[in-house]
Length: 62
Image 1: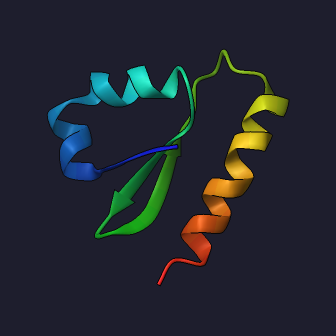
Image 2: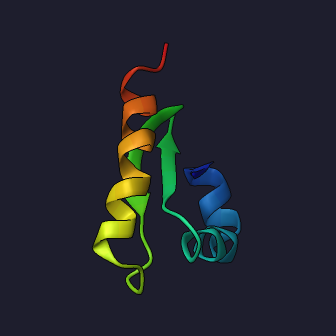
């Protein structure tokens, strides 16, 4: 999963959109997960498989 912060998202939104075509993009605000960018063309089953590890990693982060 690709992660970016709000500053980089503002500076280059197309990069985040390109990554979102392949996998969900985690948006960080102050090094904390804040939002998730998803491509609407992806199937829900595929997204579910990608989201579980990403959410687990963000919840158990030091």
